[in-house]
Length: 504
Image (cartoon, rainbow, N blue to C red):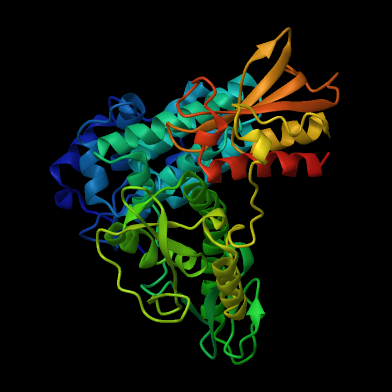
């Protein structure tokens, strides 16, 4: 149980805050009795009194856009847990005030105070508002900016999610700007920041975590699609902590259930975000230096689960041609398809292999090995359907093979919404094109529709035809000759359209 710090023990900044409350009280709707205490680092069994907490909140409410001393001093001299607890409680106050921007200081207080729980709540609010009214979308953008200023791995991971898919143009744009600003502040590229912000989620160096019931233990494992689960000592896999037995320690069981509840939610969300991210790397042809890949992927406590379940390749630094392939074993060794250990040069170019770069014998050999080892691909890789141009399509700068097939408007809208497409041109209240980026700042392709989808509403939509596909090597550039488009990008574009048509 904590006790209040005696007045003579207070540091100078705390005495100033306590004195300041007599002139500048915190807003009356913030009930100090309902907030967790501020706990000093140097004396975790004591807490600051209400006058110090009230003075701190009064100052924060006035300077929330640019907090000045002693706000940073308070943060640095109090336990992170107590600061995060106050931050989360202030989000509840904001909820009680209807989440209106009149009280936006409660939102911006998360920049100095907010912890993981606040990030989860803010992510939930963005998800709720991303397709809401204009005012709700504005609030979602404001949250994205707050998360960018928080700049914690968890906060930036949420922003990264909304960078990947254009679910709402306004929120998508805010996420792009916030993430790039955070990267520039750290003197990193966006891709480098993506690698560095992945949390370890409490996993050890081998990507493991053990939960203790006292009489028995459970190990964290990942199922298909990297969904988390628990494996008991008999090898049985449980989706959640099993019921306690008489021999189990009741206190430890409750601790495990609380820890699992938080971790399970984090890992499910992380799996979705990083599956999309790494699949994008495969499609765009991202390459790492081997030593950077080693740190960001192979030995990272969480990302090593992607390393073990994907096929990797070494690429020629000049031509970007695939020169050899390898996998990562359970003990994190790098192995070729003959099960021989491979030593990577630190400067070798490493990437996620796209199946279009594999000949049939190599693809079959690796597919068989992955099946034997019961590896679960986090997304379609070796089993991914690949497509190529017909001989008569290569000379032009358009692909028209789908012009005689009908696509249902709902299938088009749904796919475009969730698969990273951007709105293109519209004519006479009809949107006649959508485009998708295949490589950041580089290759993209455009889907041309006839007659086009209604702008602003799906009502009145009629059956569509994908009249043509065009490819560009620069943002909003003119159509490039088809024979100059990388085979991987051709395959991915044709795969997208085939998937849409299969749902029509």
